[in-house]
Length: 138
Image 1 (cartoon, rainbow, N blue to C red):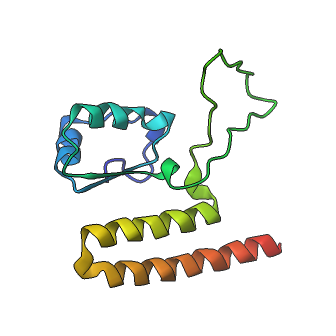
Image 2: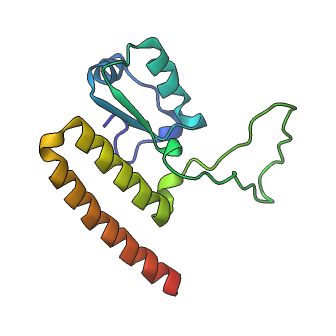
Image 3: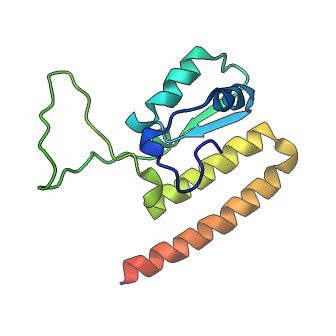
């Protein structure tokens, strides 16, 4: 894990040791949005043919970024892409899709443990679904 719990991910700067860790990994997991631009820059400079790169934003259906009245309005230039909410893991529905996709990816990379990945994923998805049901019932 490159970004330690509690660290500010929006201003993260990888160290040379982090870049070596990325280069040596089998699976690189990132959100994949604007705040992970550093990751894309590093990945473009490495030979990624021996690793699986997983971008959470490619797993789920994205929602367009909402801007509140307190935020400064930003007009888009012609041809500028829409902004999407990068906090994809905060939705229980997205979290379930992410867990399922990660179980599939890990199972393909490590077939000897595929049953354990799927069983753990199914158990966690059931927990998330139960919490989602409780929230929706409020």
